[in-house]
Amino acid sequence: MLRALHDEHAATLLRYVLRLTDDEQRAHDVVQEVLLRVSKKPDLLGDHDVATSLYSVAREVVGAADPALDSWLISDALTQLTPEHRTVIIRAYYMGQSVSDLAAELDVPEGTILSRLHYGLRALRLALQERGVTGP
Image (cartoon, rainbow, N blue to C red; front, side):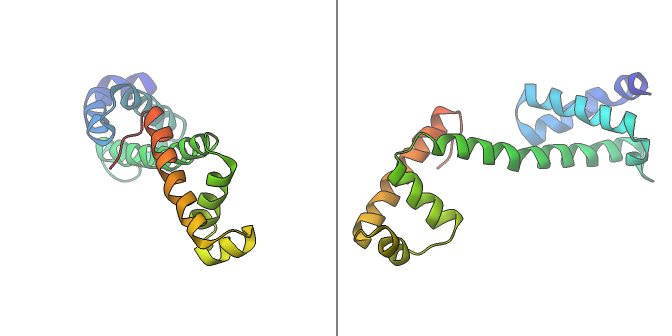
């Protein structure tokens, strides 16, 4: 079944996934993952035609990988920050603490918290760029 799926659908599926990912190596990996999933669980093909079902599985594979990859990249980049910068970024952006709460808990002025957030985010952006993540 895997060989037949590959022979009949891999090329068009690859073109589709390339449009989703804009990364040739990742697209090849996604196509392989999709074909393996479908060969192991043919019920994933559902009631639609095979190509439509493969595209649907491909979107799931691409979508599931993005948040996990983003989370790993950010966690890795956060390790490059100073403890002070990392602390305020995690507490403000992930734990939702306000500047005034952070200032009180860390016993520093609010201006210091704002400064640490500013420079910490700048350092985080640079660390992400070093890992190949580009952004505004």
